[in-house]
Amino acid sequence: MTQGAPTVQGTARDPFFDNAKLLAIVLVVAGHAWQPLKDSRAVWAGYLFVYMFHMPVFIVISGYFSRTFSFRPQQVKRLITGVAVPYIVFETAYTLYGNAMDDRDNDISLLSPWYLTWFLAALFVWRLTAPLWRVMRWYTAVGLSLVLALTGAANEPGPVLNLDRVLQFLPFFVLGLVMRPEHWRMLGARWVRIAAVPVMAAAAAMAYWVRGRMTAEWVFHSRGWGELHVAWPVGAAMTLALTACSLVMVAAFLAWVPRHRTWFTDLGAGTLCAYLLHGFFIRTAAWEGWFDGAFWHTPTGQLVVTALGTALALALTSAPVRDLLRPVMEPRLDWVFHRREPAAEASPSVGAAAAAAHRQPSRPKSMTP
Image (cartoon, rainbow, N blue to C red):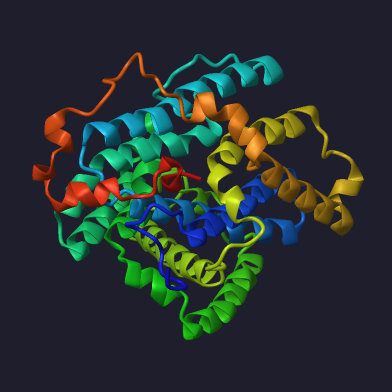
């Protein structure tokens, strides 16, 4: 494999994508660990900074690995077992856990994702729409996704499947769908890596400066303009500007992701486990007031929290944790599905597109955190 060229039509996993996902999940866990410490301006700035791009990284990669989705039976099966089943399990688990620990008294509703599970619901919806975006020209698909993002932010579609986030994050998924291997190679170019340094430095400085001038709710993409107390055209300008800034930061982040195997590459296969499990630790710490002590709000305490968040992310992506959760994350469900694909689906007559799909990386988790 040429350095910097992702493996899209081979059987081997490309270390670049596993490296990117592992580094991004560390930022996700650290960002959630920083939530109780946002009284510090530095922590608030770091929180805003990482929220600008850590989930867009996952969503762009998810879109890229959805390029061959065409509703083939095996693809639908993997979507159900790898996305729908974990969503049902963890949405139920988080609801019951919240009720027990925080007296939330919430009903179990699979139509209203809570906390971390919104991403799985969104991924399920996005992936179902992938064939539609793929038949469009790239500029039509990206343009329409931006229109839908603006519509979602303007009309506040409500809590059903967190459609506000589904629509507002949609452009990142569509962009991943229309990307090609050469685009990923370009991100590894020397000039891109050099340009990424001042870009991220400027973004960090801006995040520090905007405290008190902008609410962090903007980067969650979970609120409509009405809830953010703006209207057209300010809302549209903010939504488009933040989307553009996030894309630039995604590119800058990916430019410095190692293209070769590292000591943490194999952990990239377990990022979905870390994503879904770390919320139990973070919410327990918040509900139990573990970070109420003055020490945690000092620079030293904040560094300790960051180190603990990083260690938690690495531990939850480890092989033993993945093996433990395999019945939930990758259930076989042979009693539900056909033992084999119908012969018509497996025959050569399905054409080159289906053949390419067979050569995709064998693990479906490449499309998820």
